[in-house]
Image 1 (tube, helix red, strand yellow):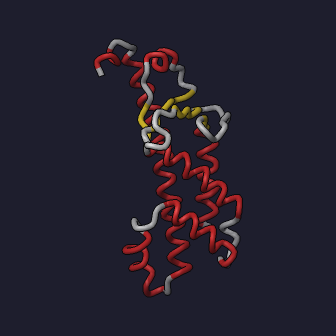
Image 2 (cartoon, rainbow, N blue to C red):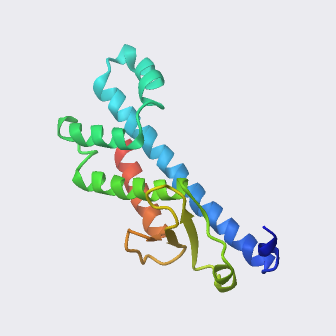
Length: 169
């Protein structure tokens, strides 16, 4: 941490605040979406008098987001509404990918990143075994992205809100 103190502390604080807001919004929206998926699955698979038990003991923390997404995709044609379609599943893949990157990365605070920070984007470094050291850039205002290592926070927010609205309607 000492080497960071040699650099502009104000910029470091701005980067941290931006990164925390982005990570917080990504994780918070993903939790809401996951709960909505769980509710759809419970409503589909359980009789009304067993729903709270199924949700509490089985779906709440036993199944992963990926397993819930796969199950939702598998039953989408059997649901009595149009809440879930192929585009929602594609959007869920995107949401899950960014969620995992945010959950398993830390703010990237190298001197060149600190010194060039202008509020346009924030960088994170991935710490998973498979993607260790990968630098992920999140555009704060721009909608430019390639959905690999460059993401747009506004595009994520629009996608997550569209999915959540569809699931809870």
